[in-house]
Image 1 (tube, one colour):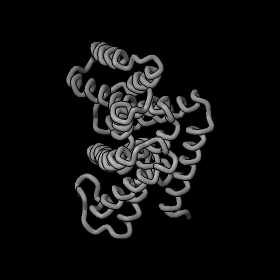
Image 2: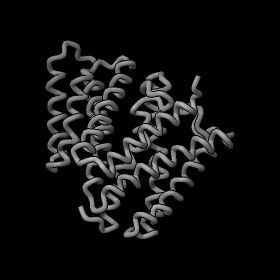
Image 3: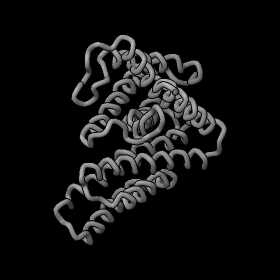
Length: 266
């Protein structure tokens, strides 16, 4: 039998291999398809969690709407698609026989589209920045490296519970360990981001270290509310949403920081 850690390492190695190939060797259309695939799978898992809460939604309808959003980054029309999505979701609810869940159903579907499809799709925008391949690699390296740091430091030294009612296994020591690893990885990234200033790498490392853990805790809160431990059944990693959670807040931040403060060309 393979241990839980063994499954985690095997699944992680598989995802890392796909990520490296997609970022540096695959054509842009393949990168887009990978992002789109994660968006669709993550949306489906989130809406399944909502259904487990007894919220009556059209899951496939929400997945399709969210799946359209990544295409907007090629045309600069994500705001239009979000407005249309809101209108279409209301139109869908006009024809539902039950009206008692109209507010919840509409709000949950729109939230899922924004939280997962819109936020994660910013990875496509980062990819199309100047030196975009390296910035995508940088973002994923910091987030997942920080996740690994928090996991191993927490397993080894964790004693003080962080927020037990949200995530019983997370510790204060693990959180600090993950934060330290994230900042360190950001500074070390100067070795391949030779055009970036240390000051910006420090600020990015600090903010990514905070936002990635907030993203992780936010998804844990959603899972606790739904009464599940994992969002899916990916060996060792939980679900696709468990893989994406710490990226969802960080990806838009990295994009806007790079374009607003570092002079990186769009």
